[in-house]
Length: 387
Picture 1 (tube, rainbow, N blue to C red):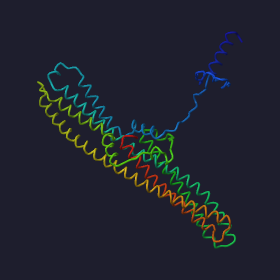
Picture 2 (picture 1 turned 120 degrees about the horizontal axis):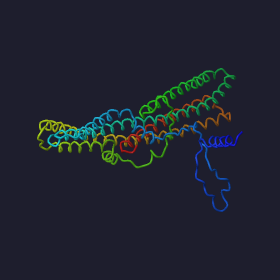
Picture 3 (picture 1 turned 45 degrees about the vertical axis):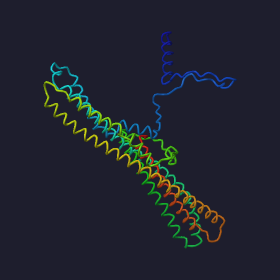
Picture 4 (picture 1 turned 120 degrees about the vertical axis):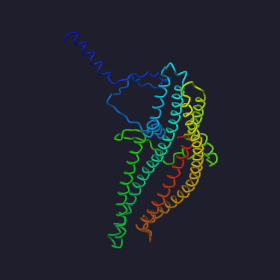
């Protein structure tokens, strides 16, 4: 092998070794003799590696705000407004004598403001649906966990009932009832899995994501303190929603823009005076409609905030009562289990099965009340402009 070939071979080995490697700053050793381990100079990250990061609720709602398909109509208006601005900017020797430039420019301004209003409404509706779907996914996951936990306990009850059946056929109906309950859990699992799949597909659609792609979400438990803290009163929520709720700033901007458009057409051009007057009448009609829509939006936001705040209070009380019933049911279940383990007279697998069913019923009601509370919180947060 010649000297040139040896050099080329060495260069190729160096190039191969550095593919996918990224330089990292060298960390200084800690004082006092700590950190005696050698400091790595490079960190290899091969190009074919892919690590999917989970989306939290805020990141997902931001994706919805940017890519929901409902924004198509608003973007179409923005495109028309851009064309009008382009025509208004096109030079012409007679424009200073006519109303053409003001007509194009005022129309573009109005369409931009209308597009912003449409976009705000579309984003709010999409984010509201996604917020509820996220809470449904969290509830599905918790319900699946409850099914798995209770199934393990129910299998122990079945084993004890089958042992009792060997001694007496009187326990046969109990064995069949427990087996039917276990079989029903498979149906419940399938239903929950279907709900999970449908919710994820809908979220992917609303977020403008690939329908065939995988959606990895960081689902917080339903007792996340972010949703529960805070002293909320209906009156304060109504005022805050009316001042900063979804679409408020856009509706106010539309009203002010239409007023400005009417003012722009107040002049007396030498050419196109009739056309300008007709357009001014159109803008005045649109202005009256925008003012009425702004008042209607104010009423909807206030009413929605009051209803959500009241729903939070009602569902919180229901959740507290349901949690107490669940605690009592669990205590009764543990007591029965202890009595059966000690072979106390009058306590059999039948009592274990009945108390286990009572725990399941109490747990279901408690989960429903927490689900309602979190959905009310999600509605209120969006109405207050805090997705």
